[in-house]
Amino acid sequence: MHKLDPDSMVEAEPEAEESLVDIGAAHRDSKLDEILDELDRELVGLSPVKTYIQRVASLLLVSRLREKVGLSTERPTLHMSFTGHPGTGKTTVAMRMAKILHHLGYLRRGHLVVATRDDLVGQYVGHTAPKTKEILKKAMGGVLFIDEAYYLYRPENERDYGQEAIEMLLQAMENQRDDLVVILAGYQDRMATFFQYNPGFRSRVAHHISFPNYTLEELAAIAELMLREQNYTFDDESRQAFVEYLELRTRQPQFANARSVRNAIDRMKLRQASRLVTAGGCVGKEQLVRIAAVDVRGSRVFEGGLDGEAETGAVRGTLARSRGKEK
Image (cartoon, rainbow, N blue to C red; front, top):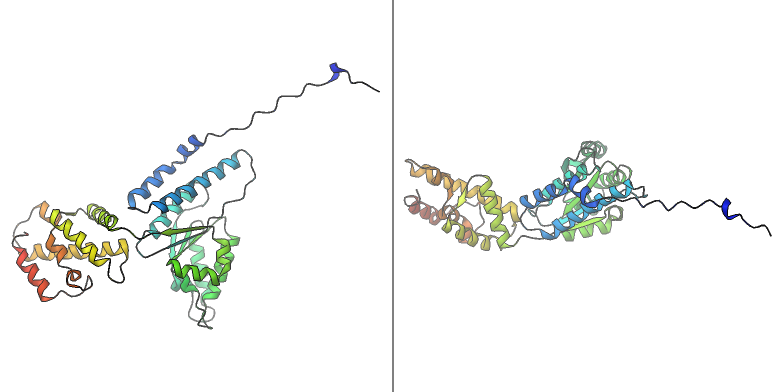
């Protein structure tokens, strides 16, 4: 039997050192923390939502690093569903999500287009296709946020054109997924029904994020933040009055979390302005900035009504009696 000459054997080269990537450096270079910190400053609470967005951002970052070292990887599925009551920050989070996706190179432009059924569905034959195409064209390279998406589907109306818009959206979500992210939003129970009757959406949506209602403490903090951004402030009495207002308002119908807080602040500013103008005389910066307790308690909510309803004589009397001492 022929024997191999040991001298003729070529020594095997040591196995090439495995490619390494510095995740910490990549994270710092991506500046993701700056975007996430901005989201944290803009939105009070919502810890589960912020945690999920952070995890999605981490997934996208790691996917880029996998590509860098030559690992075969599919583009992550990025279409999402945001569920929750109105005023819980869904649109704001969608804007930040678009920015993250653009920042990491998953979207060309990173802009946000907000649409509802009226923007997508026509009222007669041949009207839906051009409307939907126009919205999709505007959204390409960014995020299309469809609010109250379940209104696209109306099974009780055989002549409804929403199904045509749904089919076009599904086609775009599949064929243009490298250049478009769709976020469907609405009440949780209605979205569940919508997905049940439209399995095409369910199979294309990978991320389902639930937005909780704000607590009273979070709503009060949101009010303080909004006032500060507009150069207004509570004093101790008005701050306590607003907490009492929230306790009453959150028990009433059609409460919309941060949106209702913003509307309440607008009405408090109206009452403050009316009080100052009616009182006349000279006022200083402190008086122009301060929301007084009477500006809060002028709401119909304290009498069992809805904020924004016409003030009763009793409320007007309270305002009148307080104008002198609140100057």
